[in-house]
Image (tube, rainbow, N blue to C red; front, side, top):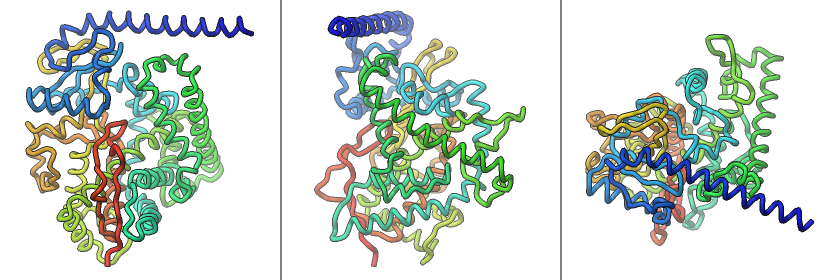
Length: 503
């Protein structure tokens, strides 16, 4: 037994060393190729082996330091950095540079960036696929986000709001302040489950105890943990680790959850063709009935991947936007009053809000855009070149890795006057249209923009309007709110909010 254990340990050590040597050799070979190209751009001085990893501490602080030094002081449109023995990243920070990659069909960086770590969970879905598969699936999914389909979801938005508002009312009695992100996240996940799968599982009432909610939250945490541990980058070592074993077990659970609903719905469609003509199609109905030019539809695995991606990409990002909206309303009472007056003018004493109401709320739309600019729910995305590309007059070879920083672009003082000030009037009438369209890219832009952006904005506006119409929103004056970048923009220690019933 002792000899067997020793053999296993020796094998693991050899595997780790082999992995490190291969990674180091690959990195050195790539760095020699890219070093001269990167020399045209500024960036923090790296360690020869660890890159800038030892300088980070807090990733948000690292990004802010670089923003101040290179974007503000040097007016650089891009800067470079690298972590451990991964490919160096060119961080794009200006509309002139970010548009080069956003206009292209350059794929998400499956290797050398965090997308690789979600593949076992989300599969080769629209989020990470490329080439003919991405083009085909994008066409098949687009009808699911047509305005006629999205308008049918307003009842769900309002039903979810009903539950959320009651939770706010009961939790804030006696002037109590509550942390907003967790409740917002449960609400947005509830919305997605109902709109994508017609699943009503009392998600907001069961809360973190709901097994699917618990699994999704934990998967996000495990993905982040892996991204911060270079030894877990290797798929074999990751599978052998306790983190990896838990991750794959949870993947199996969420996959089975989606597959059971997909199988049941496919059977219903086969047995009852009238199901296809029901009053409100959900996302799953559309995926199950979509066919390409050759009459071929999506496989059950492809459908599952898209549903899981919809859950992953749609709930925390919208929860982030909703949380920062509550923060902005609480911090700026004058702006809250303007939003409230407009909502009252449009809906009066009506409880539910529909698409026509939303289209009339011009100031609310300006407010939401400024939240998305100022607090950038998705701070950055990455791309990897499949062919050479010229950025700022410098040609980058195939395989180059880029960070497309919405956070940097949205806070670039050379683009936005007083970028850290919250001013919805920036988006009044046609003011923003006079600017470069790539100066405001909360949902990315170009061919690989977020397919669900209209869905997300409708949901946000309904929830904000319903909340502000019922409650006066205030912040805990003793609680400090700080930005904290993860996959989405969060508050470091949460956002403490009180919701007081309006008289």
